[in-house]
Length: 373
Image (cartoon, rainbow, N blue to C red):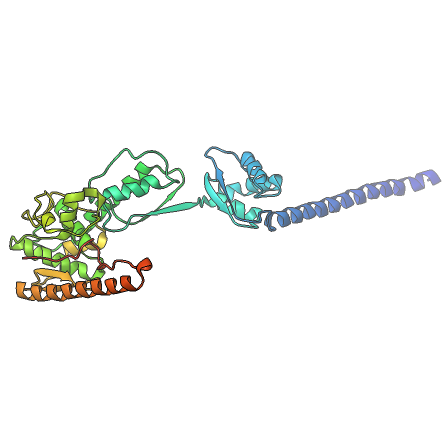
């Protein structure tokens, strides 16, 4: 074997080794680069974002990931739309698509925080509250005045058909849609409570229940009294005694406005309207307000009592009586409270005329709810 032949094979092995070492080094460098890139992406994705204050951004329906990322960057919510898009695409199969809506991003929100919020679809929520005892006219005025709701009100539901409550909605909800939620909620509540009612009640229909519940709602704002007040009215209906409820006088005069700017007069009591229960037998033709759950429950399950009368007691509640004589004694107490308050108010006015105010009784109705014989 020649010298040339002797050294040829080791030379080939040496060249092959150099190639393999180069490939190994390149692979190691690639892994290091990939790791560094992954670390950079993760760090950028989870680090505090650029917002210095909270910000509300609207994502419109139909927007893709790229336009959303660019919009978030232009709004100063994220710093790198490229990283945001890359991670969004990578997580889409397990975390879902981005949702449309109105979103509030907190100060310093990371891209991870932003992505979680958009994938969860936790759109900003708004609230509107309709208190118990409000008329439909007053409730619709509040809904019409809300700046977040959309569209005109094209419906006016009957009095008593709205369930008073706090309703949560998102931007873009129409006023008509919200009103429908309220009427659906009242109907659902009535259906739920109807089969749980006492037997042999004088109110036989859902409309009659709503009507009496609206009177109870306007008569008292004390939760524990509702069943008692309902019991008084049920007793009166059972013996065909007029309800003589002051709030029905007011509704017969001003309708859906809900209140008068003066006390009830003897002329008002004598005025014959369809709602004045001093002048009509039984119930008015329809509710005088929108009753809440507690008032409806009170009418469907009134307190078993012998009371036929009640009058304001000066504490915001009422004094109840079985007989006219007892009631007249309670009325005398209330009248004294009224006189004492008026005297105290006048005395205060004489001392500080610039800050004097008129002190009036507290209660759910605008005037003291006195049941007269």
